[in-house]
Length: 120
Image (cartoon, rainbow, N blue to C red; front, side, top):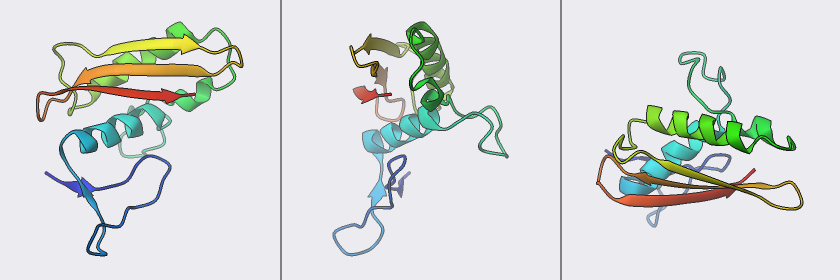
């Protein structure tokens, strides 16, 4: 089922006909994964356990193992992500303190492997 096209922290997108753009398939799953990983736990008052709150780790040195665990746990809670094979989270730390995440997961809706990379 399609949903509005909205990347976390961005604005709604406009489609080619001037209407609000829709997202489905792998793009929708990516939107949902990013929203779950970057939303702070407790921010959704109707679903207090939703969200990894990875933004809280910005500037915290040595948090790579915790970030990996939190990200993987939240990925397994996302209905659009297949449980098998389990999502793989890889963390690298840059000299400037930036933490880079690369997540490999299988989209449960279409059965396709996807990669998602972003920095904290």
